[in-house]
Image (cartoon, rainbow, N blue to C red; front, side):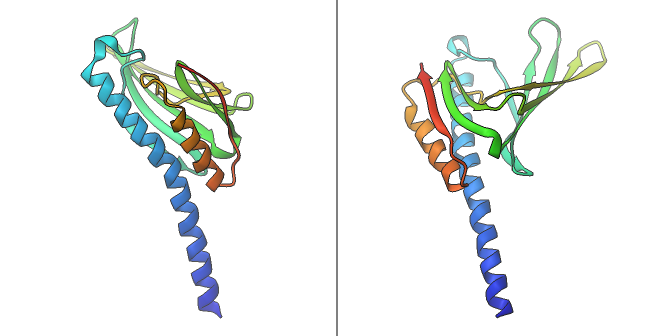
Length: 165
């Protein structure tokens, strides 16, 4: 009996981990394709140029990503970490950029800026929009549908909101 209960609990844990991995798998696949387009055609790329430090992953039931990007107005770079609790996501939308919509101030963005001449600054901001850093691909509503289904497997209902290329 004890073995059956342990086996059942192990099965449940593996299933939940696999379902969370489906969200990150979908997002990382799209992110890598986006980065490939970014590198192959930088002069026509519509978004900011970034380097993936740590792709989408789940940490403490929160979706997280870490990116590195050159500063625009000064010499140096920014290391930014974006975090949102999966349970706080209620929609996926596209208005040039693909983003996840949440409640007020549910997205945490920690930006660590390193200046070329030395020194650094850490800034933390909060938002209701979690930008997925995906903007180049057009006519991709199927991506939203796939992500909605992946969240549903986690018992989190999100909707596909507006979708404008």
